[in-house]
Length: 327
Length: 312
Image 1: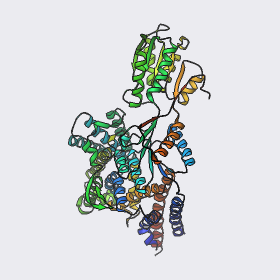
Image 2 (image 1 turned 30 degrees about the vertical axis):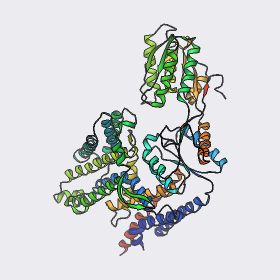
Image 3 (image 1 turned 135 degrees about the horizontal axis):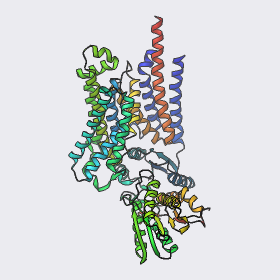
Image 4 (image 1 turned 180 degrees about the horizontal axis):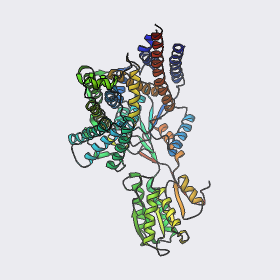
């Protein structure tokens, strides 16, 4: 029973939440259209959280992702304003993310600064840079190319539901592609296994000949580029960019990874578990909005869900631990 | 023990959700209206929303107020959610240009969208707001009349922000219409610190460059913060006795305090936030009643605030 709760407590809770919404909203919740909606709404968070999973596998984390998403969006929009095309603008935004990742990686891995301190400092710097690039203003209107905004509104047609075309949004496909890529990196490549080794015991990994410094540096490239991708997606979705718009992604992404970690057997970060964590957070937002629950009550409930999941996991593990001690 | 606790915690949470789920739809009667804003924490927004809710209660509507805490993409997400839920109308308090994706979704489902001080867009039935041109005209002619149509005026404007830019245009026209009024300087303050500190610094420089008493007759500011900064500069320079007239716009609490003190800061313009909320509800009711609106922007009158009525 304890083992079941530890392994499946969070999953059971997630299923329970979905069932409650399904019963309360029989006509509108468990529909393909609603789930396509949810997937699109969560796409930016999924990209950030999936890449955050890579960093958290090595036991580090990156607080600068939200600020980097804002900065990347503003960089792309500013290039649009200057008359550059879509490839150049997106390329510059992704390059910004890559360079930001290099800076974070060097600070944490080569200089040995704690990730909390290093990425808190770069968070502030990226955020300041976003204000400098944009002049503090929201860039919107004609400066943003039609095709760029259209990307976030269109998708792959897969048929019709109730006489309206059913479309899998491009943003959703991009997010799922990112999850797939991270899954391959973490599960199928020797690179991913080395990251897990560092996460379990960095010293042992180093003695076993793993290039700990280089690998710890490299993981921040994932969060840097991932945040930039999410920032560009966000800018396309709102057809505009302002210097703070991605900031909220950071805490939610970390929450999603933690929530996901309560699902996995060994409490390790895993990208599919992160996807489950993101999904449950998004389902709460969608379902509670449809139930017309006050936004502030919604925030309290979401926090409570995270705490409950983590408590169940922690208590379950402790109970299991005591039992093992006795035997 | 730990196990019982976790079971209870999980159970309690699900029970809360279930309670919310059961009671939520049970309350539903009249029209369902969603009000979505990223800015509920701002004082002005709270006034509109409360007045909207009060009028909606009289009309027997079910209102769902959704605050996305500054997140504009979440406004689109919530628009998708409430469209899916099948609300009768959506009221927005955000720049419609940024939520085009949500407007498309609502339009596809034939759900009318209204702006509460939001901005214009073809997909919005009507935007209910204050007339920025009229507000600027109120204070600009107040300044012109107070200085008898002659003298040097300093303007504080901010053309990068469209709602403030329109105010500057009108003040330019009013002052240009008086042959003896000279615009000494048209300052765009740095607003990254809120606008007061830099406006003060700019005004101090202007006062230093024009030391003669009477060489600056008035300061017209497109919003209250530069007016407050100019007031600080004039007081710091010890020139408050020269009768320099200062006006702002928005009538924020600090501006009202300064106006009540009967010093140089003489006038500002108050938007009727509650009126905007009420009129938005009435406009939604007109459209739901089948009326085809002719005007896509509906203005709610504003009020000039001076020492005479600041206490009201």
